[in-house]
Length: 404
Image 1 (cartoon, rainbow, N blue to C red):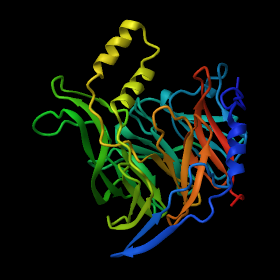
Image 2 (cartoon, helix red, strand yellow; image 1 turned 90 degrees about the vertical axis):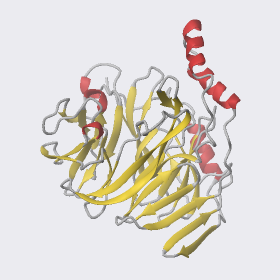
Image 3 (cartoon, rainbow, N blue to C red; image 1 turned 60 degrees about the vertical axis):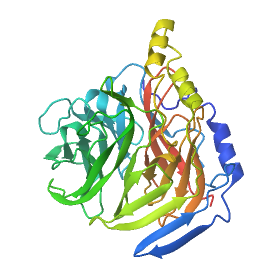
Image 4 (tube, helix red, strand yellow; image 1 turned 90 degrees about the horizontal axis):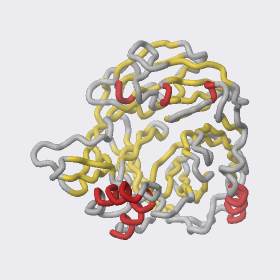
């Protein structure tokens, strides 16, 4: 059956909305804008932690696509991305079946295309990894580990498939002029020489690619994610407190960097730095107690012997220099920048700092708990969530910006 609302999953949402609107907007926040050798630098004061921007998110989703059982078209698995088209239709990148699925504005299934394979319009086992709008009312879908992307028309008819030029794997976004922002992947690659031990980091390369797949320009090497490396075993695993890469298309600029500090750097397509946005932030170094508590929660459902073995494997994991300054970023349909605050161990609230298109801070916003945000439009938020039975749903939540 098709679900239209998950009452149990968002039982706390009503109190969240009341809290967000009761606090109101952050008045009097200071933003200092200056020019430094042709680069616009915006220094922002941090909002007070107990305040919220006056925008409001509705108490429940206006659309929830997903099913416990019934028509397989509504059974979602490993949703990687989703986008809303101008006419209200929603396209879901369902990586679990290597398909794109289209639904109308009421959530009714309209069609499915793609499938696993190497042919035109098909995807590898980990694809489609992303989906987005393409000029002329078309749709693009990326297949990261196959190093290619496909373009479909508004009805799902395959138009063409293009490979990304070496060394790029990931299609990050489309620029207004039709060029593509691309990057390498953040998987661990052993460096030349001795295998690292402790916290290790890889670098990623970014560039601009023409719509037909030809390389246009390189944007250089930038920090990737941090890994926990064991030289004796020559093994690596993701570090739970890893500082990670950030990237996005922001108007005519591209954001590249890492969340080591609260700083957003935006570049032109020729590689020139054009804008730096900073916000007050106090870095905190993780402690051994933080790391032990994280692993205790992660392995708490294992049996006694399995749990002991899992904890022994991570007992000597090295600590990172600091927690990430924030989690991830999104650019909404009005070119506001949303920066998700880093959740310290044990924290569950999803709080975002919202900046205007020029990079000046507006205030905090809180999104529904458990919602992975894919897209923020002028009046909606599109994301994915699980219910208490781990059934996956794609949801559209209403967003009202009239409060401030």
